[in-house]
Image (cartoon, rainbow, N blue to C red; front, side, top):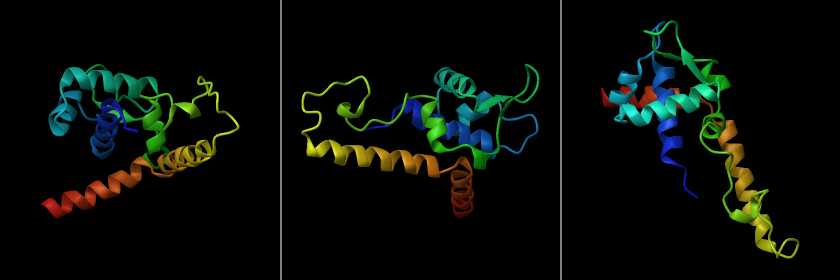
Length: 142
């Protein structure tokens, strides 16, 4: 299983937004520059985060982006779901997949538990957790 580039960049972009201390938010051009993400690609990421209800414009047209909720209320699972329909480590766990071995496959339980563990980890990690780690890393670099 591999998380998409949009999901990974989405986490980086929303983390950049969360770390901004400006009342007017942070501009998309600054997120792109700070995170080394192309402006055009970031536009798709920001749109998905807005549709998911995680970010919004701080004010008028000339304002930057802010979070719609407190960082401790946004989980990594929320961010992931802005880009992907869910977590599915193997096809046989998908609701749209019909397996001929259903009911006779011992490995499906293993994959199901792994899938559940990943989802629980994504739900238990908040944007605030990443912010706290980033602040420590930034202090070490300086």
